[in-house]
Length: 241
Image: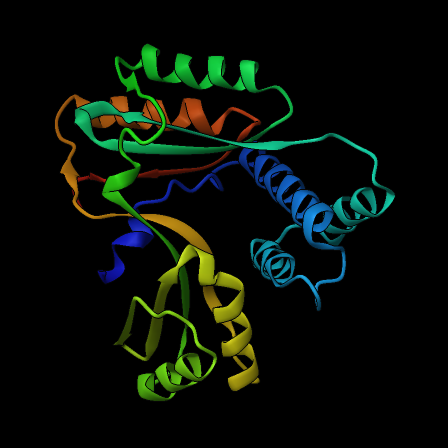
């Protein structure tokens, strides 16, 4: 699968305003995960992974605790996931994941980002079949055989394992995320995940060149400014990547 995944997901941590957006994003995800799977991270592995990632991204503890308290109280907004697909600048393929309390508003806002940059939003399934929905774990290590053995013993369906420059990267289907994470943490007590998340990995890439490059940046900026947008995945191949 290669390290392409590192370049296929838009990062929002560019400005102070973007940091606030990152905090909000994690707050929503933690709230929804805790509400659906329980507020105890030991019993809710998806929640534990989210909290670990939030701490790595320097999300303040009070933001995490506020989301957990809201879930414990059972009050608060009722967000639902929404996914939009289409073609971005240069005809690259794009998937936009959202959490929304108003699907009509969110669809209108996302559609505007597409139309303002001369892009085309599609129907569900338009481009998703050209991506693998995968769980990804990256951590320091040398013995990929021991990692594979631990995962196989836990009956985890492993898509691929890479061992490069003292780092091991594990790919599994997205549905295996919790099982794979538990198997790795139980087998390797001091494991420290550098990447621990679910992504859409493109099966092919599309070069984005010339005037399409600033248009692609504007497109991503418009989407990142939307409170409901959680993640943007694409198959764009930009110069220097």
